[in-house]
Length: 442
Image 1 (cartoon, rainbow, N blue to C red):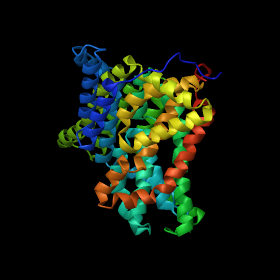
Image 2: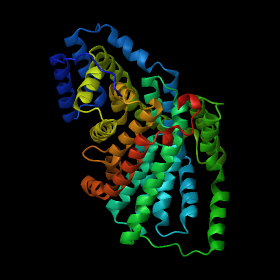
Image 3: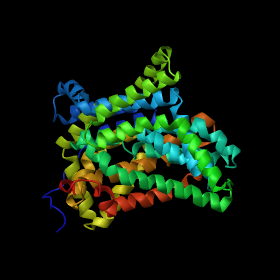
């Protein structure tokens, strides 16, 4: 047998269902997610009596009192400094020079710069906003319909949580007790595959509809343009270089790499004269606002996760699902479906904190490597960023362009399809996420 047989199902009553209903209703009423989760957690603890309510405050602070979480505001701040110093435009210049030889070159450059931004900020929404402001108007000028240009940026920005260093991997590592550095290493190949899938989708769509021409440069012109872009913006690549070398060489923890990246980015900004002391208040406030959305969700999600664990919800979930089928293939497909559906209606952070402890026992029962499970989960949730009704990136690009969310979502369908292929590859081929890891993790 591939599964551990449970003696009995866990019977859940109104102490579980009523808080869940309250949570759904509050979210539907546009109450902030952290508040909705907090109310649901307190209601569940009060009704079940499994955990003294007096411990909730202690649980809130203990949950976010983790050294690994310090990396989150540091990477957010690095992304903000990157935009304010103009270094993000240097990435775009180099990406454009790299892809100018092909038809659809600027569309491909847009995807590449999304990946470059992801390798620094670790945030998809920040990437969608920053890259969208730089590229969408130019994409339209190049021949792309505006809804498709928005969909391209929204899809490319999904790499924000998929290419390391990623805030999502820091959070799931904290929840499941796995080293963030290990997850970063494992996510490298899957992150690149997602980037290639989005690039391929744009190339195919551009070939079919002929949105953008180009690709008529001679070899000499191509290398001259690339050389000029590299000479003009080589220093921008110091930042991702520091992050990747520090983390993957083992010399720096993710938190230390984030701190180093902030210092390096600020230093470059001062040297270039694109950053001044007067910029710091607005820059810090902007980063604090983003961080202020993430940390309260983590803080309030942890007591809820504890309550669910005490009530036996993860075990009950495993029992209920395995009672339906014992086919590992179907179980993996069911997990992917749950994750994509969850990613469509809720942000990544609460999904990770709530669903990871529930789904991991099921993954353990079918013999899935815990690292592979984490990569599959984050990648599947990433697909939800461009899937209605609440795909976050759809709202971001719609907000900065005024384009209809439904029009953008319709143009994003090909990207969703190709990204799903990568999710399936990660789920059924363990080597995709474990090749880069030491043997102890395989």
